[in-house]
Image 1: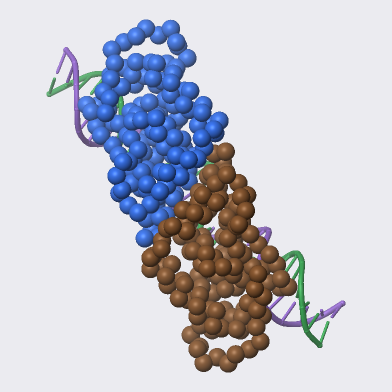
Image 2 (image 1 turned 90 degrees about the horizontal axis):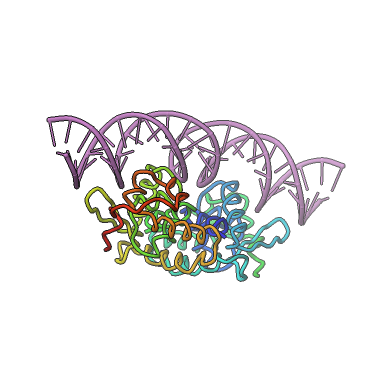
Length: 140
Length: 140
DNA sequence: ATATCAGTTTGTCATATGTCGAATTGACGC
DNA sequence: GCGTCAATTCGACATATGACAAACTGATAT
């Protein structure tokens, strides 16, 4: 259907959403991690994730207070997996995507109990003391 | 570049433009043929075609008063040909696309001197007398 | 040079979209 | 039950976008 194609195509035709997809290629992430990397409001990220999920590009699970999103591994419609393949083959050396990955590494070095409370501001404090893990302590 | 990806993705993420791409898979067309099939204002079609061309998805040539567009056969950027391949594999049995192709067959049965002057209205008059060819009489 | 024609550009309008702040919802701890 | 936290939904705003009409541009015929 033309409408489905449009829905999926529009989903990847936004830079913020494309950045999310490239982040998730590395594996499932908690919303708060995506928020910290992209430095966008949680409402914005939540809206983007919902749109990607509606387009059949992502899957979601909840664990306690946290929501995790990952790249869809099923065929939810005729086009999602094709666009995911195209996205995977794209932007391989893009500086924005590469920068996001570096930021994600720093995000992952911060205990999420801290990240969830103080957001991206914690990234500049490498001397922050370690705390108990929260949402990131639960692999898929 | 993320910006280029966005430009190309946005170009195919619109139904009218996707219909144009599917039409052009059958070969080069004059603007007036596309106008007749899509039943959109010439200004609208012209805007869409310009956007597709900017995205590296189409090429254009002029011949007299007429402008012809065809699917790009060169790599104008990193993504255009990838999206063209995806588009070619998509909407193969879509009813809107199929209907456009049927309409195009009827458009092609009308001499373009007539079509260019009277537009889509000529499609309902199968008894129209043949006239000299105009823009369609010039194959690539 | 003038008129006609086809396509393009400009201007306008209604609608869509990305973003953020506020409000809401659901999970958790006490 | 209450307070806290993370994510989601809602509302508002600025900007973008698809559509059309009008104006413009370039090609052609006379």
